[in-house]
Length: 206
Image (tube, rainbow, N blue to C red; front, top):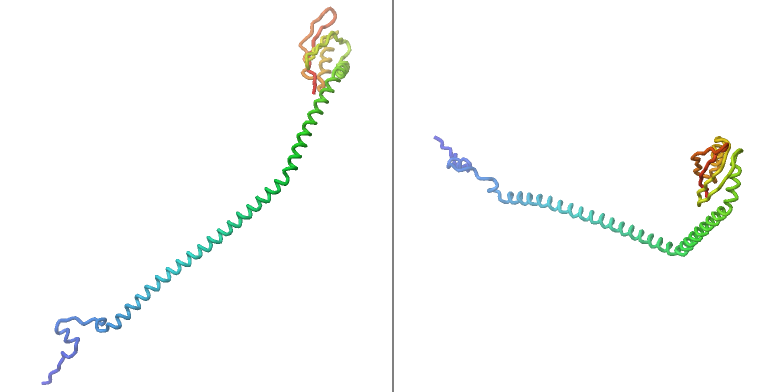
């Protein structure tokens, strides 16, 4: 008979002995080390890229902030220069503004004096105009009895033949509103064949 030795194969021997097959990594330690180094290299490269991106972003924001700060400084400097220029122009115009204010004051003073003189002149001429306008307003069959002045208030007492003539006299005075205001006729009293009446009005002095 021919005997075949099947125990020379290491795998078969280990299986026959009840042992597990050895790990290839244990048999090839050099290859395992190389794979570990490659993995660590890949991980370290990704972290370095993230740090680089962060630094670049920080530099970019820093540059933008610096540019914005320089723009603000330039704007502030321009506004300050403009303000200084306007202040200088204002200082140059101060004498002219002072003269213009004095001229306004003198002009207002002269205007008030002219108004006062015109009013005084009008008041001096008032009796003449008043009597003339009063005579032009007087209809037929109406006579004056007495005129009473109390400042701008005037009281007219008179006589008339008819009440219609008194109303006509009142309407004539009221139509001359540049001289007479608030013309009032309270009533009349008959005496014999005539009517005694009283009219009140305000003179326009200004």
